[in-house]
Image (tube, rainbow, N blue to C red; front, top):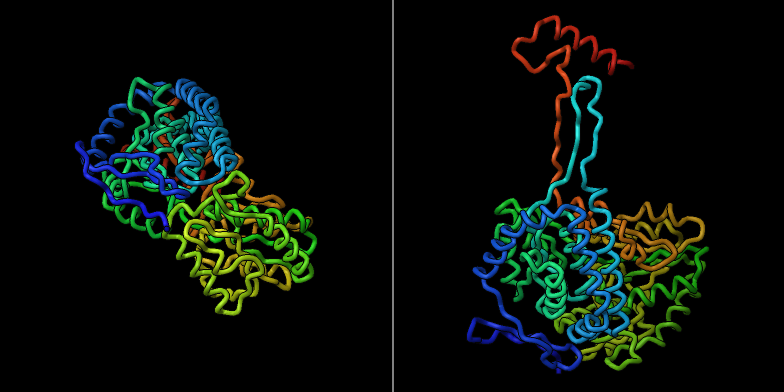
Length: 500
């Protein structure tokens, strides 16, 4: 029987909902469905706390973030079990995403002052009597709407950077992983008990919509492109800025000189890990015709050793969101009906909870398996005559999140030609683990960036200050300005900028 997320139930203090294990349907927790009034109250509390949190300064906030990551690190097995309970993923995968998240907390706290602190700017010859500076000030309250596929790593990519920049945060995790969200917020509140700097709200789409309209200063959203568009439309009513990290249809390019063993291993892991529920996971591969057959053989051989299940020997777990099973099955069926071949798996690989690995070849480029985000453990492999064709086909998508290139001689060149926000060369998805690199996409994959200096700046507003150091001999901003002053300025600007 397919797991179905239950509807809200009556409760003495309001509606609640159950968080279910996707592997067993077992209820692993019960949480409130926060109302619009609840959400507005949380945002009001966050606004009250914002001045205190910003007032701690970079060093004070960094100290609290250090203590928070210490709590997470010391209790890592406990957090990983909560992740496994709500997503079904293996404990090792839960640990991997949590470890990467800890690295990002550390980087954000350590580097916030350097990135956001006051910086001098050149005033230019015409304004040489001025001292020019820029500093970044906190926005205020940031609303973060997180996903269920990586319930630790992904939301903390926004939360940690927003906090380091001096904002308070109201966090709405996915209705599939509210327990993970609660665990993270509770751990933070242990080291910041004074004010509600990081708060949790739980519920369904209506709760997230309430957060968007609750007078927050920015929304950071991770989820589907369709939902991202709805959030943008709602945020436009109040001119609330948003960061959208949406879906992807990420491609791998395999050149003739590639390390085929490494490329095949990266393809199998990138396509099937986390049950394929990875926005930057591998969904398409374009392989040079000279090495295509050998590469496919390696992928098929490696895929045969990968299995979905809930036992400890399984490499990945169930599909977390039951409705996605139909999407995965439809994509596989369409690919085969259009002439594609399943060398591993196929339509029968889709069960009522688990989807076994599926490797598809000879799939038309206009099929749903190539054009739409599958978000399941499937991959299409296509033969190309050269890397120019590979780049053209990889870019022929409405998405543009991540990508990977395997080439010994042309990696950087090919990476620069791919219309994506991120590219890894000769290794899978490595950009996500490097805290100093910005993370985000183009097109239907969204816009804005988390992580790195760009991620810190997303959660701050630049403040420009010009301070007059001495009175200029030529005063331009006065009605007492003389004609000879204008003539002098005309001559000066000609000398400075009039050369051919």
